[in-house]
Image (cartoon, rainbow over the protein chains, first blue to last red):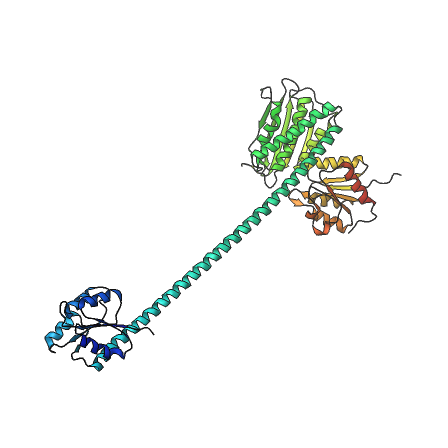
Length: 373
Length: 124
């Protein structure tokens, strides 16, 4: 059981003893000081339930000491009970209460009265102390509660972050696997295309030199279109860029012998690659047998929209040598037809007009192609 | 009278590969149906003809070929898949079918076709 402290301040030893004896029964801690100064010293270090203060002391008297106690923040809450032998008249009573006393006990001290009065203050003090302890405990528990909740929240957040990280990792790995598979598929396909191109070129090449020249140029044309697509991040590319890319090797003499004319048309990669092959074959044929095989011949390539998603394209040679249907290298014209019909789902007409080769084709733009980009 | 040549349906959307397959098969004496570049084109060809063997490219542009494969399976037509992927990529129902890897060696392809034709009836 916690004990309250009672401070007894009296210079007279006999009174002090009497008070002590009277209060012994209460079972609390009794502290005796024989002067105001001594009492103030005690008050520096401990808290007291009540101060029993003799009014009449040499040096610092009771009133002076009381005013010190009342002045200090730390001690002003401690109830002061004056012990006085002075006359019980109103002036003295008023002075005592003005000094800050809450009660008076008259000497000679009646033990019963003294004990009763002190018991009240002790009781009050102990109850306050208990309430304080409970409040502190509650406060401590609340803080503990908050702390535990905060820790739980932090742990949950950390777990969630780690889960999200894990999910992101798995997603990235899956994406990478998809990309690798896609790459693998494209490479295998490309090798198959190169094989096919080699076999077919060989079948239509009378000599090894002929084969080498044609084959290398065809691979080069494929490579160029792929470079163009790479530059555009494998998104759509412009038809005129594909044309220019394929025909550029054949415009070396600086003269503008190949004229391109048409609105912006955005092609998806598949269509771009197919047309790249078509333009290459047309250009090769023009160089070898058609209007680009002499000094003055020209090629006019034009295109436009037949309707919302249908492109009509025309390749017209002029000023070249007299034209006749191809006798050798039928692979070239077969390839042109196949690319336009099989890859682009279009229609094609090759006209071997005496004035120059004419190709007319129309094909639908795929779902990913379009007009103005 | 010469026996009727066996017919091979080609479903392949890459023009050069389709052309190569066709010339390989025709040079070996087969009759070629197609080549079809899509599921729709393949189904249109099947409405008028019945191939002895079908050679199917697994990756047809944006769609895959398994609609056609299922149709051919119900008709009990012999199937050969052509692919750059492994057999794991095939749906379970078709994982047991003969597979020719891309890029293909001509003689390997022709062997696969001959083998398929030699089976008296198509495997389920």
